[in-house]
Amino acid sequence: MKLAEINPIHPYLDAVLVVQPDLVHFGLLREGKIIPGRFPSSIRIDQPTHLHGDGDPHAHVFGRKGDQLGVVNFDGSGSHGSKFKLHDKDADALRARHFKIRADNVVEWAAIEGVASASELLFG
Image 1 (cartoon, one colour):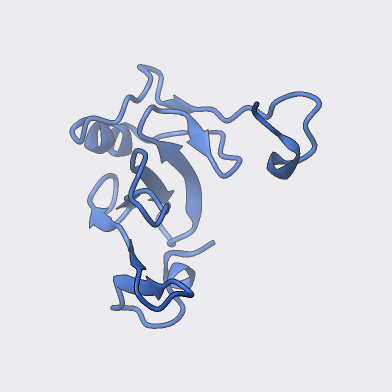
Image 2 (image 1 turned 60 degrees about the vertical axis):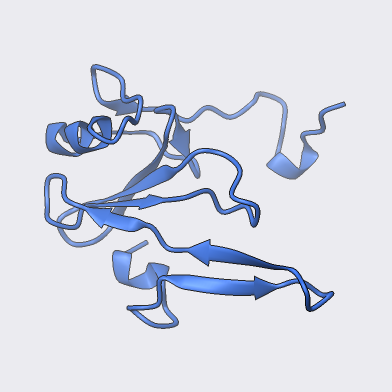
């Protein structure tokens, strides 16, 4: 996915109000903040996508041509199936924002064995 494809509605739209069916309650979805890493706009830090804002931020890391290299959670784990190694400058930029990046800059994502999809995983 390219950086330009992330927000196809409008390149400058950075927030969307989502109105609930009761037409009283709403949620605010915001695009993240672009920060420099290896390139001037190689990292976008997004806040949690839950309507209530629970959870930690995650970062989308982009390459020279705007291709998404991967997604890293605040705790340093991979997200969206990401497994990649961060460039030193990208890793340092995330560490400066308190992301827990491993010393070797590797971001790993692991599937839970025996679970075909997230929709099949139930907690009691």
